[in-house]
Image (cartoon, rainbow, N blue to C red; front, side, top):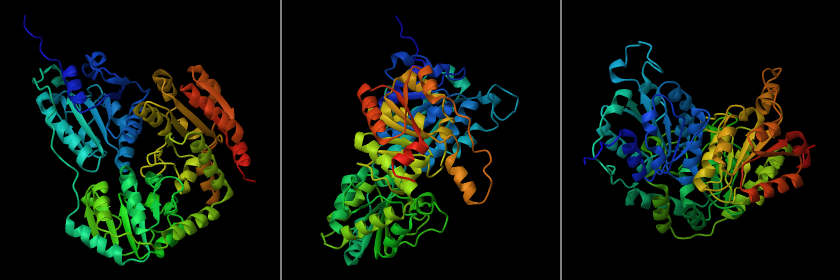
Length: 538
């Protein structure tokens, strides 16, 4: 008896599982059928969205919570173009994502003959939203390309990677390689001389401040030790919220776009920026000009290009945030300054300067995390998310994720929350406006099919509210922002998802508690006008 030749699909699944991949998001198509060959026996969990955009956002949410790359299978042409938006969002937010697609037969590429799903240059399109895009010339090359992809995910700044497989390669017999070609690549640590220089600069400072971005989110304990050693306030960008834990006396969970954190920066005589782009959507969302940063400025970055983008440091600590922070803390002697008083003054002033509507949005988020303190909130661009980006103090790191900064896409929250729920094997909160939900409303079907315990909170004002308000502020008569909305509860129930509507704090708390207890998908429609009144607006 002779062994049957190994087929492409099962061989690819074997390579992925060797990299600890356990979940794949994708929609089967005529050009990816071989990828599905043997998938049901592979041990990989397959989740079917209703659009490749949904697949990409699910992979994003999965990656943010699990720390592993989200993996997608997509078809040639329209499957690829549909997933570009999620890849661009993940690229902007440094989220690891592996997209494996098909591409037309090699002998047809570049001729423009009108082949099914043909693009003039598919790889060129994908290269713009990925760390790299690679076209296989032989199945035998896949282990090497996967090794390179996981080196990006594990040792540098994580971003999407795209691998495309020409249709004629599906017929190749893959090599008998049972394990991937892993690279032994560790995340770097800064040079000792640079650590010493940074420690000296901080020791000489009287009013240091720490700026944290998403690149510091996996080093929460190290950041807290550094802050407490320096007795320095910690300003957290959107993706860094919760690093200090809720209520820490040194925490400043307010956006550096606000005047009060900017005043704190102006009053400081040294700054450490950790894992932050120092980008405009966090530091200049009102487009009034980037804030002046204190000097000496110390930056901790894994990416040497980002190190000198937006703000050139006086001292550069190139390497893993956790390693760099720990080494820097060890080199410092603890000092008592007035960090807690400075942080409190900034927090109190920033909150007082917010209008009643923004404060109501923050109260709404506080209620969510009071009822579900360990549950991630996955948001789209909607009022309470904007309020939260200004000043929500989350209980821990990695519990606040949304697409309202960076690339800033709509349609993110629902599919990303599905991915996040699957990654943590537990509940997740999806916070989305009625307008944003329509970008991916079909993923209610995917939610019902996956039975992921996602609590979908629809902030309903029957319009694109933030855009309407911006038009009014610019003396432009609002056009194109009023929306015809369905009966969201009836729509959810049509998919077999429980649904209800709430308009006050008591009702919100009760339905949240019930939803958590059931551990099933639930849709909760929020009447914006009534809820804002209930939470303290006029």
